[in-house]
Length: 194
Ligand code: CUA
Image 1 (tube, rainbow, N blue to C red):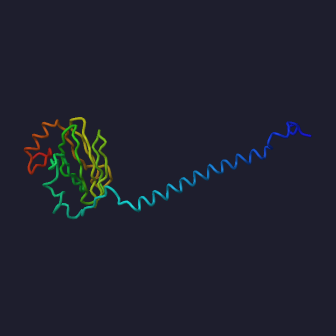
Image 2 (tube, rainbow, N blue to C red):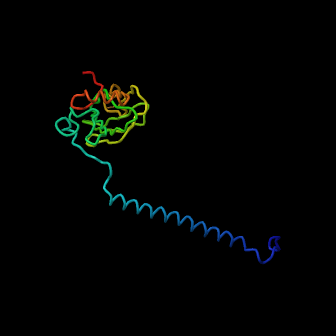
Image 3 (spheres, protein in one colour):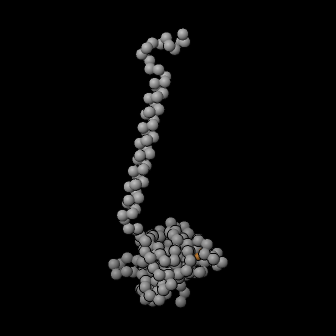
């Protein structure tokens, strides 16, 4: 007779213990899988039933002819509600305006698009970073904390002139910006030399 058999009839057999543990883990794994499936089904239905948010389309071939991205409307403008909107167009191989003027510590709604291929839009030293895709408007709010000159390079390869494609962002104190805006043609401020 083996030693462990002598421990008495009360101890469950190792086989029964293992079986119980296996069954418990099988239930736990089953529950995790069921939870994931329910979540997938819920998210699928949610995405199907909701319209895609923040997707704005625009015809890239007529940007220069009509609409908010015509050249005289580019730059930083004060809207009727008092808020600031900066509009920028990217094309091979420059941004318009080439020098962007914004006030410090003020929310600015940035609206930008591309007239030809995909370009990158990022302002060094800030968290402003997006892609400009032809046919779509990239729209987001930014706030510039530090005054100074910041480089705004295109960071998506867009063709042979990609490496030479950048603009400047000049962040100035609020009062200085207001002054520039009051003097700006058509109420669109920029720091492009005229
Ligand atoms: Cu535009 Cu790279």
